[in-house]
Image (cartoon, rainbow, N blue to C red; front, side, top):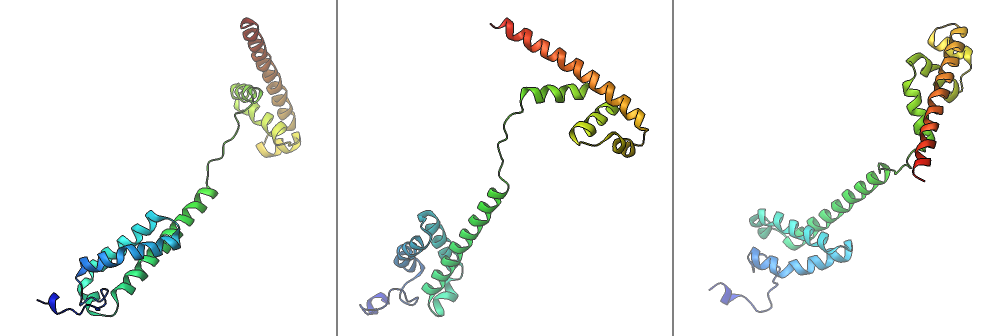
Length: 182
């Protein structure tokens, strides 16, 4: 009977005129179009509007009796779209800042040197690295590790000799394997 008394020109957005299902059916499409125009992404617009209507449903008795529920749903949908955009922007910044960089594989010579260094006794390896890679003079190495300069010179000589022998062996193995494949 109540529907029969409704005036034909009544505003369909008014809560007193429609239940929630009718309100949803009357406004979902127009709000989605508005959000789509704003976001440029239809799934995001649909999700934001759908979430706004879900929140409105939970509050429907209060919303239906006060003010303009369409304005409330529109504001919530826009806020959700803005929050989605902010989260996406933050994620993009994070990915840009912490992206995995592809580093070229080490050269075979470098692999051979690192492998040869690994076979040296710790003290010899340490002085070779400090002298040749850190460019420290013998005096500074001696001060840093707390041994006389003569000891550093002996360890440096022994380290270089062992490296030269191991790298020469490696070079011979490489040469032999390359001549076998020919």
